[in-house]
Length: 168
Image (cartoon, rainbow, N blue to C red; front, side, top):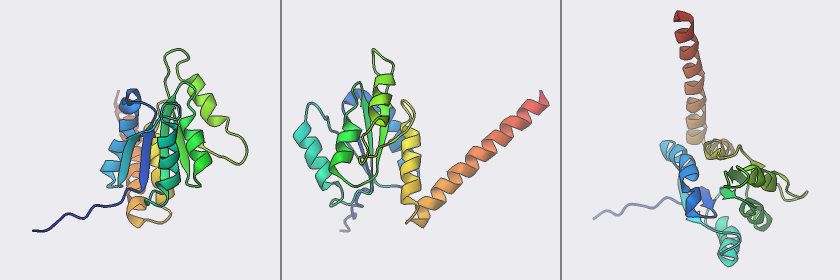
């Protein structure tokens, strides 16, 4: 009997709570379409700091090359992960109940010098996945081809919209 070889994930998708899953699933769906291996975990900077520490410290050894971290509210997860690894970290600010994601956005983009975190739009996990793929594309022809194809599809969708508008 043949066993299926498990492919090591290249991208880690983490979030502070399962309430972030709806937003973060957009990133996983983009990666799945491109056959980019990923893992998805709940890792809270505040409620499970030891787990967060272990996740970040072992990420590179486990084969991850990019981490996408979504968080709402005080949104410390992306910055704390970035402080514990040299892997690129892309922060996804998640809409919060009280401040509609502005607190998350400001928390992620205001990192101190020396600990950078890339940041996408509020609830913009698909852009985080695209950016992760662009980083991975530097060393992977198949991922580069996927990103290129995605961009071509964007271009053609705009052209089709222009043509529909002209017909009206």
